[in-house]
Each structure stands twice: as structure tokens, then as C-alpha cells.
Image 1 (cartoon, helix red, strand yellow):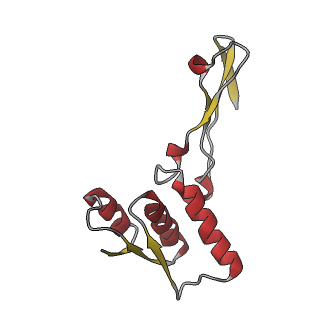
Image 2 (cartoon, one colour):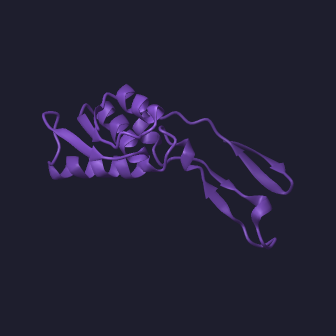
Length: 129
């Protein structure tokens, strides 16, 4: 890890290697929002959750739900995860389930955007309208 002073603050530059995409969930960068501080003595930081694999904070809850189901014995490769969704939670569950080898069936309204449908299909989810 190297650091160089910039405007009396340090900039940290690191190169990280992860064992798999699931280990990146929640391990997103934290940045200081220097220009938003109301006072010089106050430091404000933001977690860049958009850096999660699907670009959504929902990756965290989806991973936690699936891991909890695994720990409880509620999920197996012979069962199907059923998720009613119109958005990011379903996409996150589909991505994680694909990696872990689980089937997913997503129930969505018909007016969901084509992009969301394409993402879900790319992750192998069965879609029901």
C-alpha cells in the first residue's frame, strides 16, 4: 500500500485480489467527501455500494439471505428460490444463486424494463409475469 499527501490529506492506492466475486460484496471503497463537510473539523465518508457486483446495495441483503438459508438447511440444489421482485433484489439473488448453483424463479409485473428482464435471464433466472 502506498500513500501520497494531497492537500494535507492522504490518498491510499491499493490493488486487491479477491478469491471470487461473492467476496467483493460489501467490500466496496469508502471515500471521504471533503467538500461536503459543514466544518473543517468534521469528516464525512461515503461507502460506494454501487461498486458491488450488480451495482446495487441489494447484493448485501441477497447474499445474507442465501447464506442464512444455507446455514438453516432451508436451501439445496434440488430446491428453487422463489423471489417476488420488480428490481434489484431479484437481480442480486439471481446472480448469487447462479454462482452457488441454485435455481431461481422470479415473479415480476409485466411492466418491468427489458433491461431488468435481460439481466435476470443472463443470470439464469426463470421469469414469471
